[in-house]
Length: 117
Image 1 (tube, rainbow, N blue to C red):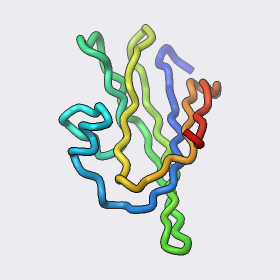
Image 2: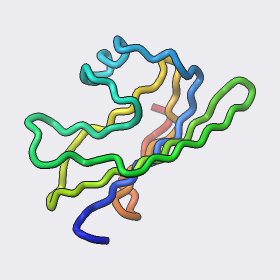
Image 3: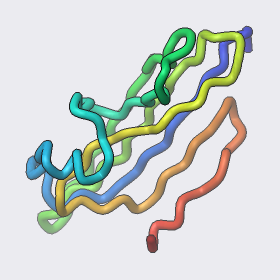
Image 4: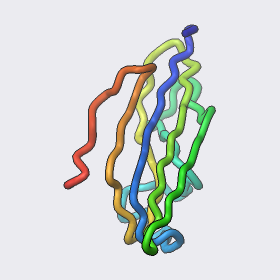
């Protein structure tokens, strides 16, 4: 791997309703005014250096008994020579449920979510 660091976000989740997302819900979650269409990493203010950029995205959808299960894999690249801090934002519908979330840097997994929370 070159100086660039690749961070992969693996984001499988279960959605009970696909299109019920509204901007009011976003504000209640602390999401900024501009809602991303897909996942995005938002740097804290003030922004320093180049932001990480989405370089790859893969979406799998399975529908069974009226429920849609989505698995979203996104790859972000940090072209900066130093570590960057940010908040990962991904809008989901009001009735959507996240079943797992994982963050990787290279091949190393950096923690695991608790889907019961």
